[in-house]
Image (tube, rainbow, N blue to C red; front, top):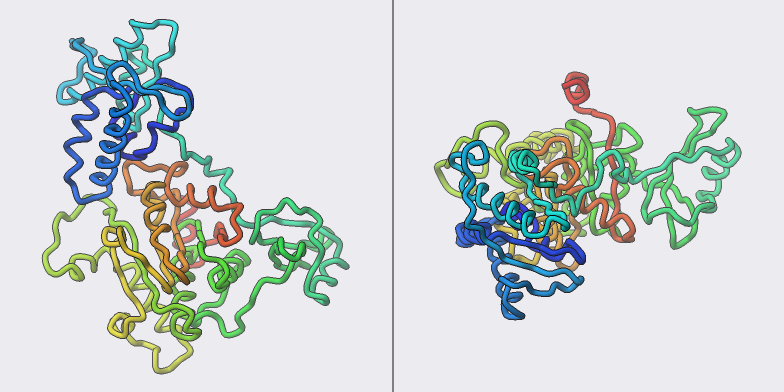
Length: 432
């Protein structure tokens, strides 16, 4: 039994239950109909659900069941049952009707388990109170403590580490590494004797990571994870980079610095395009006056802060202390909300999507599929800081991309662990 929020979260969820029977209460379709005219991601999802159901309807009557591609069947059901007393919940009539359909299905076939799949926590609680099994939709769930970090520690003799420094490589003993995985070589007898490398599956070797002597727009790595991140960001063969880490680890700063370096100093990309989903922290301020640029300014201010910080760090005296506005006016930097990304083809650009943990897997797919020839996409975010009410640390779009692109040679990932913003910011991230 599917709830409205599941279909809006993943319009393809109808086909995600293998050979099980999928039931959609007719009241859910009525709710979907209310969203379909919205010019938002919810509206797009609602229209996709409607198209999918209409296609299935043409294959047979959905009231009596339509075969799905993996062997299951789809039904649309309704109920004449009315919940009363403690069963009912004032103001939640659609939820009441969904529960009524579940109760009917349970009575009609007591031998078959009935499971309500919903992302609404309170509805799951109410369902369980009525004796109905209820689950969250976790098709894209990856346990956060099992998330791929992009790196591995390897202990070895000090002589092998010396050989790595002298000849510039070591043979790859284990061929079952993901591509572009980073390696921290550690001397088991002397932990301070170490080296940083990365897996090269093409050569079957561990090779040194790239180093930038002058830093990237004045930014130098402060820990090994930042060194790994810079290597990915400056590698033109890596087209998709994911950087995950708590607040203050330098995810966004490193990404923007690398993009500016590639666009201005190396000329690899036409411009750096920076975007982020718009979700308020705390109570929303409502509609803002002014032009589109003026409306976006409060949401994009963290990006502006990072750029102006980089301008102050720049080794070029001509850049130092100048405003991000100059980069925008020169066409080197473009700030754009994700709302306007749909339908575009984005070639030859270094694209940074900040706060990507607030995106659904489907939204991330939409963004990454915009990449044209020569474009690099960097997704940054902290899975523990989610403002989207329908996302959590295990099923958001950022975690989904890390998991799905792990075996791909054109993708790389690093989890940044140590906060470098300030001692206070690090303590806040760890203690609060």
